[in-house]
Length: 315
Image (cartoon, rainbow, N blue to C red; front, side, top):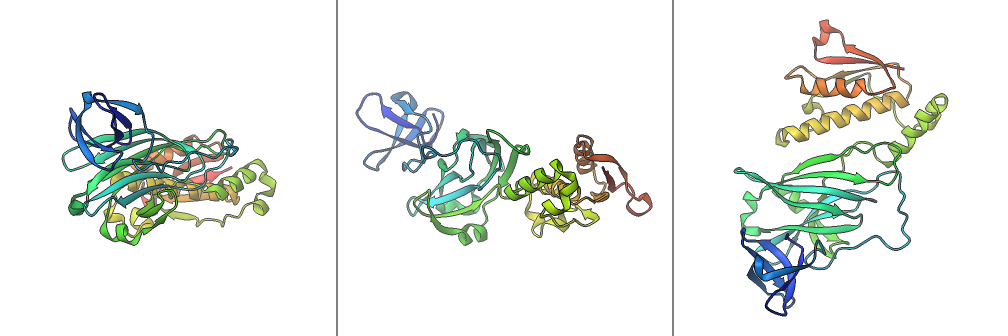
C-alpha cells in the first residue's frame, strides 16, 4: 500500500484514496465526501494501485498517439499544490514524451527512505506525499532516479538521478497554473539538464553518420579548445549543490563539449578536471576509453596542469 492507492473498507461501504502512511499499522484515507480518517491497514483492501493523484488528475496518452519515439522531449517536474492552509501535496509530473521508471527517496538528517517507485507514463502525474506548510523550513530533500523508456533511440539516454532541495526563493518564484494539475502549483523541472536535447541528438546523429558533411549538417558551435570542468566555472550557486549534483553537472558538460568537438570536426580538446581525489578524472577516462571516436587521450601539458587535465585526440 502506498499514497495514491484506491482502497475500500473491509467492514463498510466507504472507499477512498490513501493520503498518508501514519505508521506500520495505520494509514490515512480520504473518503468520497472529502473527510480524512485514520484506518488500520488490515481494515482496507486495495481496489487499484497507483490509480492516481488523489484528485483524479492522472492522464494517459491519447489513443492513436505515436508510441515509437526516437528522441527525448519535455521535462519531468516536481510540483507542490496547496490542499488547504495547512498542507501541500507533493506531485511528480512527467511531461516527457515517454514513460519513465522512477524511485523517490525522502532524505532527512536522520535517514533516507524510499517513499515511492514505479512507472509513470508521459503526460501523467503522481501524488508522492503531503507536507505540512507550517514546517516549510524543515521540509526534507527528495532524491529521484529515472530510467527513460524510449521504444527506439538514436542515442542512448543514460539513467538520471537528482536531489531536489526546496528553497523559499525558488518555491515562490515558480507558482503558476499547471494544465495537468488543473490548478495553481509551485512547480519546476528537475531533469532539464539531462545531456543532449532533442535537436542535439538529431544533429549529432546526422554528423556521425555523414562525417564528410558534418560542417554543413551540424548547428553546433565549435567548443573552446580548453574546457574547465571545475564546478565554480559551471554553476554560480555551486555551494548549494550536493556532491552527486556536482558530479552530474561536470560529466554532463564533459559529454556535451566532447560531442560538439566531434561533430564540428576538431582535432583535439583539453578537459581541465583538477586532481582532488581523482573521481572526476577517473570517470572521464572511463568514458573516453569506451568512445570509438577517440584516437587516444593523455595527461595534458604537465608543466602547466600537472595531472589535472586530459588531452583528447579525436579521429
